[in-house]
Image (cartoon, rainbow, N blue to C red; front, side, top):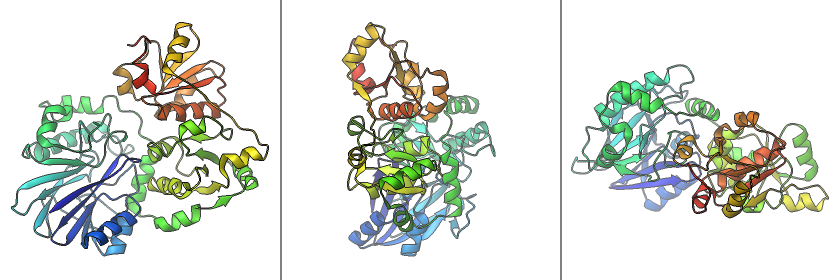
Length: 456
């Protein structure tokens, strides 16, 4: 028996490959099938099952294309109603994989159909559990994604019952393999590790502490930010089906000359610049948004841009297809194409470029001491509450559009996040919205803490 975690940093998402005696199963695959097909060919195994823990809201799953390519059976838990053929497992149903068995545990709470899969080894011992968005390291799945069809309090109550009746009763040694790691918006504050054990989570996870249902509901629903709008769109796509990923890439991988770019902009397109923030700040097409491929690109594109937004890509040479693929993972398919020649072609045509100034944490400290400008902290509320610059304005990047309503366009702002990635996204957003005095802080709060800046 072998278990592999296949982690995609861009999505903070974990899929899983299970193998036993020549048969394989894959749990929660991302949209493109090539990595899985290559792994199956390399291992010489036949894919028997594609297990889905729930209707994913933060990415388009690859289960349909993968099943079509291999003949594998798609398995969902109870209450998963799809527009395509699947096997709906009943609670407690056993699936045989080689010499191992996989048991279905229906665990409603994150969503009504949420289901965990318990893997038992050749001897019948519980080995690991694939928890989807039911249980993360240090957190649980948010219970507010049914768009009014069921209240977050009601779902949280179901989650409490699921955790106590199906999860906490497992042996402490059982490995916990969740669907997401840090950075995912499917939880409030997911821990930095991508796997754990039941025993470790009983000690460290607030949601598994002994508590009343009322207390659990209060703690799980407290501090939930507004879910990204694309979550509801992706969940719908995963229920109804989708276009083949290779066709999407072929349609979107279009080289655009500058006149085509300007025509697209006039028709409402936005330029998404996927270069590294350090390159973006040196010169970019005015109005561009920087979401670099070096970070959680797909998550932030999905969080900030409408899913049907017309997008023109500006990328480093050779990263055009990667930029398109990662957008397709979260259901973004309205890509007009990419700018031929990139920013250099734009500049050489005598068209203007914009820039963003970045400052060091030491320069930030000097500005604070001299009373020059305001600090804008774009981290999550949990990060901010864990420590922040004194008198800093908090504006969670996920809610940046709302935050802009309270900011002054001609006031100087020094923007920081934890490490520098999100702050450049925010700086580019402010510049696009007409803010004239924007500076990015290198290194973010992790480096600011090392200066004499007063903290709270």
